[in-house]
Length: 216
Image (cartoon, rainbow, N blue to C red; front, side, top):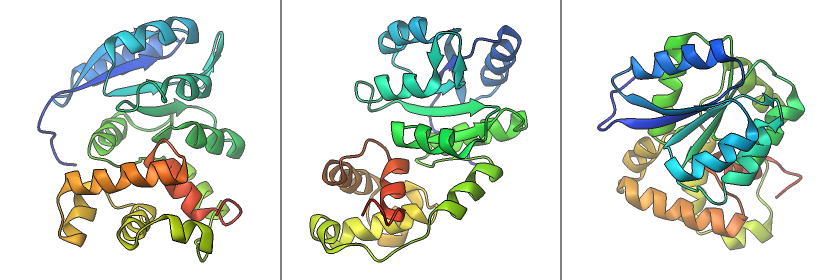
C-alpha cells in the first residue's frame, strides 16, 4: 500500500479500553496517521468530534449509549469531509447495509489483522471504501448491476455514469482519474454533483444506489 503525502488524523470511538488503547498505539506507530482522540460512548463523541474534526473516525457499532451507526448518521451531514469507518465484531447483513446507507465509508471486522487495518485507513485516505473480505462478499451477493432506469439516467451525465461505474468496480479516485485522463479534483467535482443528484452522502452510498435495482 502506498505511503500518504501528509499525516492523516484519526479519532477512535470504542468503549472497551483495551481495544481502544491498542488501536491508538497501532495508529500512532504508523508514519501515516496520528490519533487525535479516543472516546468511549456516543454522547461524548458527538460533542467532541465536531470540535477536532478528524480526517477519519474509526467507530465500533455497539456503544454503551447508542450505536456507531447512530454516530455516522448524526455527524456525517455536518462533517462531510470526515470519513467514517466501522470496526466491529458484527457481520450481520442488516447492520452492514444500515451502516453504509448512513454514510460509512468502510466496514471492517475486529478480527482484521492490525496491518490490514492500517492498509484500510490508507485506502480510505486515497478515496477507497475498504471492507473485510466477508463483508465485501455479502455486498456482492446482495447486489448485482442492473440496467439503470431512465429517470436516474436522465439525472446523470455520461461522464458521471462512467465515474460511478468505475467506483462500483472498486477503483480509487486516482485510478479513475488515470482511466479517464482527467485530474483527481475533477473526479471529486463530478462525484459531488452525483451525490447531489442521487441525494446521497458518500461514495459507498452512491455505489449502493447504482447497484440496487430496487432503488434506481
